[in-house]
Image (cartoon, rainbow, N blue to C red; front, side, top):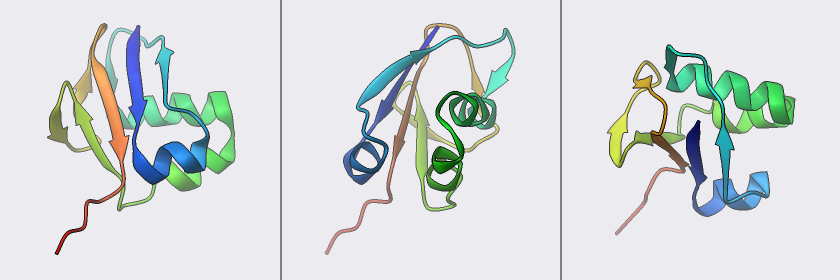
Length: 83
């Protein structure tokens, strides 16, 4: 089981702050997104597969090929702007 966190505007758009997800033994962040789309519907595909969405596994920024294991924490958040 992994813990998934959604931050800022993604949390608002998806209407959820966090959830738990069961994964197969071998998984990647891309696989997590696919499972979330299966669970919640196509609206999530448009939001989570946006190239601007940032991901982290266990507090470390990563790409979609990052492996994910049982008890990991996966976070999704929009790009941070500053200035």
